[in-house]
Each structure stands twice: as structure tokens, then as C-alpha cells.
Length: 249
Image (cartoon, rainbow, N blue to C red):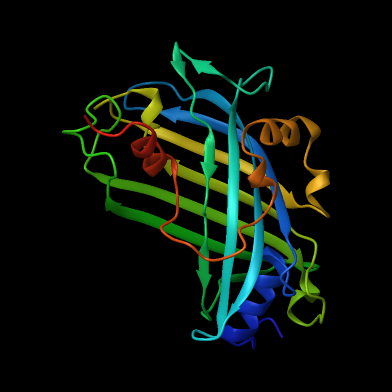
């Protein structure tokens, strides 16, 4: 079945891995670390990292696929104590509150690796577009007028994901991201950037998110405990959020 699966079957299998076919809310939780890299400098673990994504899957009749409606929140941690940071090198830390972080899922040959009793869905997403933070307007926060990043996802599901009738299956995931320095780090034109290295899993419910993280979300932006009810755009990210919070003068 693995090799004969059609793009539509692969998408359905991935959809029940990433979310739930019945539209129920699904929470993914992850944790990891963020390392810096720069020419001529040693790699350095700058931050711990922890986050959640709460998603709702909605069929999209026009494409024959799905709309994945999500919010995601993620937090920069002290690399040793794992406490949520307020400041870094005297600068205020701006945590991630992406609302929305939606995704259109259309039938396509989702890359799949057979691992025996598991399969792995692999998504490699290179990003390149005009930066929301042009250097002329944000010389301390941006090094390029083009935003470039690379997102690498792996979702691990039971091998039966291609044949089951279940609306949702247990899953684990890994995520690697290469990106420029974050705007709030104020690194200006300094060469280099960040590499995120995280792993996580699909939870039985939002209540399985670690209590510290749930409490932080409840105290700052409680809407992030739930997925959006309807599709909106454009998506939010750290660069668009920074521009919204710090409009050019």
C-alpha cells in the first residue's frame, strides 16, 4: 500500500497524522534548542525552545484537500534552567504568538519513508520572499531585504496510517529550522543566523501540554489554547509581528 498510494490517499494519511479528519482540535507540543552560527565563530546554544500548535482540519471542496486552521505559540528559554526568558543581553525577548498559522493542504505526492512499523512524512519548505523588515527601515533588526529560511519537518506515524479508518492516529515529529537572527536580537548586518532543532508529539488533549506552558499562555494570550474557527490570511510570523509591534518611523 505504501508504494501504490495515490496523492489523495497520501494526503488523507498525512492529514490524520497532522490533525484529525473529523475537525476536532489537535495539539502538537515540541521542545528543543536554538544554536547560533556565524562565519569564524564557534556554534553556541543560545536558547531552549518550547511551543505548541493547536489545529483544526476543514475540508476544502475546491482543491479536494484540506484547510489546516492553526494558532501557534512558542517561547525562548534559558538554555540551562529552561525558564521562559524576559530578556536576552539586555533586550526584551519577543516570544512567538502566530495567529493565524494556516496551511492549505492539496493532494500531492507527500514524501513518505517506510520504517517498518512506522512511516515518516517529510516536508522540506524553503522560504524566500521580500522581507517585512527592509534594511533601510530596520537597520538594527534586519540584514537583508529578502527573507530566507528553511523549514524541515518529519512526522512519524504507525505504518497502518495508510489503511486505517481512524480519523486521527498517534504521531511524533521533528523540526529543524534555519533562519536569520531574530529581529528583536538587534544583530543588524552581522553574518550568520540561527538553527532550531526540536522534537515533539501529538497530544491526547490540550490539557496534556506542560502546566507551566499552559499557565503562561493563559496569562498572556488565552485564545492560543484553541484553533481558529475560520480561515483568515495572511499568516503571522516573527518578522510580520515585529513590524506590527514596531512600525517604521
